[in-house]
Length: 207
Image (tube, rainbow, N blue to C red; front, side, top):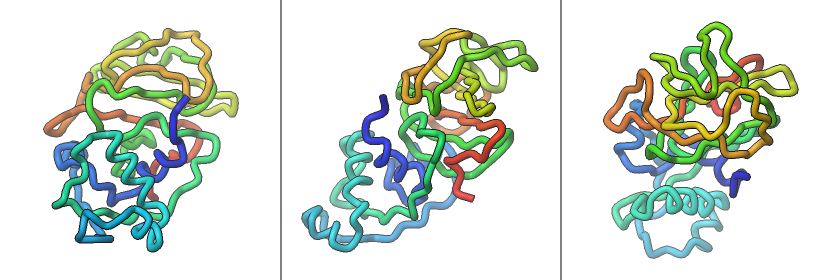
C-alpha cells in the first residue's frame, strides 16, 4: 500500500513543491513560490505555527531526494489540498496538474519510481490500441489500463516495466509497475507517469 497517502496528495496538488529543477523542467511551465523562511535553521515547529502542512511537504521532498532542500532553497506553502475521493495517488513526484489529451496529467520523477493502482480493478487490454498491461504503444510506450468497479478506467503510461498482466485483479495501492520514459516522452529527463482517467474527473488536475 502507499505510505503517507495524505502527504502525497499535498505534493500532487501543490504547484509550489520545491523539487529539483531537472524534475520540474520535464513538464515545463512557471513555478510560483512563497518563501516561508529564509533561515533553514528555523525549527519545523516554528514553521508549522504558520503553515501546518509544510512539514509534510518537507518530508515528501526529503523522501524524493536528500538534497531537495538546502540552505539556498526556500520552503514553499502548498496550495489547498484537493479531495481525491475514489482514486488514490498512483505515485509520488512533481505534478504540474495541467490536463492534456485524454484527461491526463504528467507526474515526473526518477525512472524506476514505483507506480501503484489508483483504485481497485482489473488490468484489461485496450481494444482500440490492441495492447494492454503487457503491451506497447508508440505513444504510450509500456502502459497499464485498469478497469474499476465504478465503470471508470485509469491508464498508466511511459512505464519502465510492469509487474502485472492482463486479467490481474489489483487492490488500491498495489504495486503495478515502475516509472519510465518509454514511448513518446519529452524533456531533459523524460521520466514521468502519464496518468489518464476515463469516465470521471482526473483528481490530480488543478482545474
